[in-house]
Image (cartoon, rainbow, N blue to C red; front, side, top):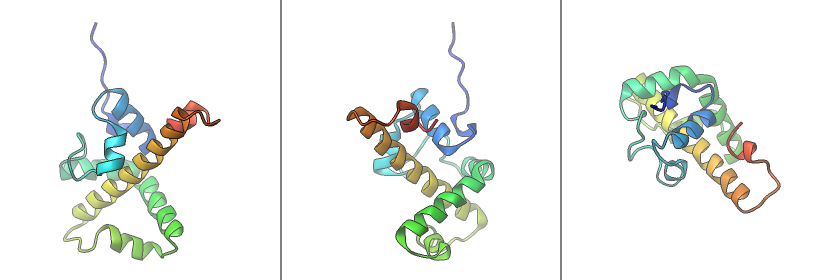
Length: 130
């Protein structure tokens, strides 16, 4: 019996994508949280992959950017500049935004999973992004 694999990048939310990424043994969320996407995250390496991911998750990506800007006490435009200082094209901007959003989501998910593993009262489903 073969295991049906779904493209982990097409899940409804970025957290759901990351949960599926780890569930399918594509990679570990903790590795993305620690090392980022630049080292290579299967499914988010090539511009056509990151552009597709951006197009599917655009609203969530901008929400993550806005939340990060608020947390840092800076304007969204300055946060955008910090993420992609010199975009030579819209494709490069989308790529950098995808990597940023996936890294932030992975860090939050990894933190939640550590809390669950440490015996916090948060339900496991919350730590997995459900």
